[in-house]
Image 1 (cartoon, helix red, strand yellow):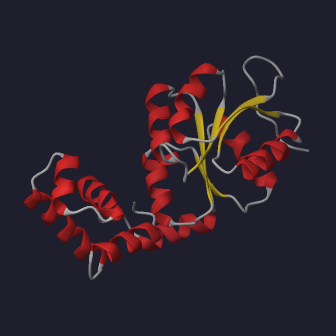
Image 2: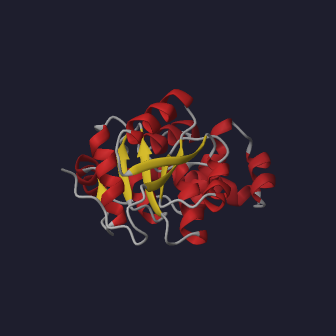
Length: 213
């Protein structure tokens, strides 16, 4: 029998916000969680930039956030939620088990980090555990994150490298980021060096694979 969380207001189900851009995945997760007698998905969104408004508009206890979403990543949405609704528990879900994502999720204030192919019972258990004040992390990812080490890119290097992913010129990057072209070149050069890449495109690929972007 599941060890259910003690609710401050009685025995009502744990109210969950689910943010996932793929409708079939979102509906499947909602259906699986709905089978748990003590958990209820009360609101769903398909975009990261809709998360905060949905959380504010509906009384929820836990937010389940996918990382890859249009409008805003789950990591960015988690950071907004942590500032605006500090009492809300946040569980990050990802298809890609990248150690860098785990570190960034923890920095954003996430209470749990799980891969999507984990059993549904594990996700439900994580929802209950974060409400008890626990931090839940996929053990394989935790070990990989420790072995990988910290993200070597600074926030500015990461921002410039991320902006360059669409092939923008240095002039376009400088204008969009309100930096000089020389500063942009310096950040890109440092990012390329830190990732061990031969060029910016390879640096973007390496950084994405490691979850640094």
